[in-house]
Image (cartoon, rainbow, N blue to C red; front, side, top):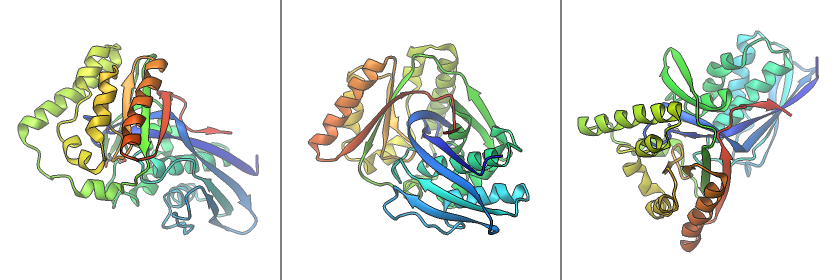
Length: 310
Ligand code: HSE
């Protein structure tokens, strides 16, 4: 058995336009890296965190990663000592599932370090225990589940947990732009209206069904028609400067659809080639440059691998 293991888990695009809290997919970059090693002294400790500008707590009970790892350790009745290091390679409050990636990398690393007592998919409830502390106690698995499973997933239910893998067309490319502003998920959830007019609900679930069917049939026109959100986007777009200009520049260039990634401020666009995905990225960045907001760009296919040991 190894003494030390390092795992990475990827960023995710959740909601995917019409699927608030129930859909998400994994992308290749950015990733979070977690190192776990055995120690002689019993108890689990987060020894260091890099790349967070000092924003994340080392306290196991207040840190998403800490809560997730402790939850798995408790379940496995692990009583010995562990030391954890977290290397954040993705921005906080970005809408890319940053906390979910840390939790997934943590539980995946511990499970591997202990000789794989559980299947990868069975780690989901433990990673979710960690994620709970970032969203004000509300359980949404649309970042954790795709980061852990890889690929595109639907969370049909969180109680009981029911996650469904959705096959996706091979030539589906994702552009993600991360404007350098921070939006806290808890705040982006607070602003949402609690009521949905029936007419809008009907439009929304038509799009959810259309998107899933489009992905499964590799029907790009259907995917494109369905990548719409009539409920959340009109409310949250106000938090992202230049949102509709960015969206229109990507759509005009030929994106299948554009929307907010998770609770923002990142914005994702889907397209059918690597070349187009890159072109869309350049155009989105141009809009942000004009309003003096720095940004990072990530181009990738849908990541089907999920977390891995490096
Ligand atoms: N579905 C969640 C939300 C994801 O939009 O609030 C947060 O990243």
